Amino acid sequence: MPRSARIDIAGEVYHVMSRGIERGEIFLEEADYVDFTSRASQWFRACGTKCLAWALLPNHFHFLLRRGERPLAEVMRHVMTGYAVSFNHRHRRAGHLFQNRYKSLLCGSERYLLALVPYIHLNPLRAGLVKDISALADYPWCGHAAAVGRCTEGVLDAEEMLSHYGTDLINARKTYSAALAEGHAEKPGQLIDEEQREGLRISDGRILGDGGMAKTILERVGEYPQVRNRAELLAVVSERFGISVEKILAPSHARGPAAARAAYCYLCVENGGASGTELRRELRVTQSGISRMIAKGRKLAGELRLVI
Image 1 (spheres, one colour):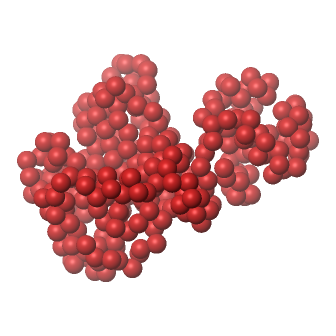
Image 2 (tube, helix red, strand yellow):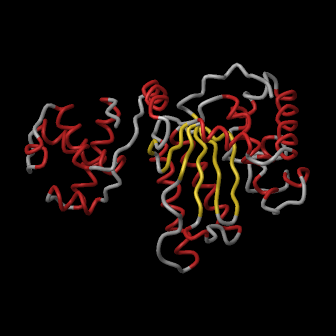
Image 3 (spheres, one colour):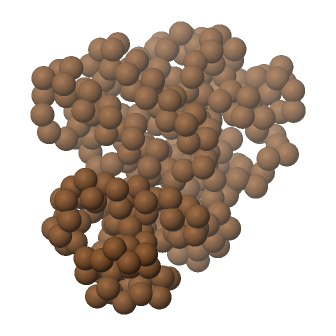
């Protein structure tokens, strides 16, 4: 595989995946695939997220994403939550659709990226959904067809992906196709497993692996591991805004405490997994008030580069 000019991808590219709850199917008919890909392409464009590879299978999906202007957690929440609601309505079911929110691996090297693209695009073949590599170009729920120029679709950023395989389109496609054939011939996932052991494992947006390397990479991109404990988030906001915890939690329209409260609400939802109902009870405000605070907090977090 070639070394491209774009080798500094650490902290920007993530392998994102999710399965159906209890390994159940999340795509039952063509309308489901169309709905999910439409939502993904819409939110990727809106948030500046670049998709370098993707594949949808009946009970799970894979994406290789270069993060954009918005946090990956926010992008995937919009895609998956909206789709789950639509899926449940369409199929007259209730309850959770996905097993957890999603899992992701931070891609820490160009070598890993060059192996991940064919690994993801080969998923339909490994699952027996197509009979060979030539038939893979006819599978509509995978980025391979767009990568080789067979079609155009709104999910894969083919130009961005191919730029990692060569400096001109023709040679890049040849190199990519060779990598795909090589990946199919080799033991599936051998390099992927090796990189996962050595690299950074992230689950639901949280760092679970090599802390030292994680800190170095995430400091460079202004992103830090999420924490679950709302008390920790409250302490961080209190220190950053210079306002006591008591004043943040107390009802007040004063500018300082109100801004800190809004930032706290946003971080609780984004980083702590809190629901609006939980925050409403804690802060003793209405649901619409919580929604306004979260929106205000999101804006403040962006302006102040307040990340946890």
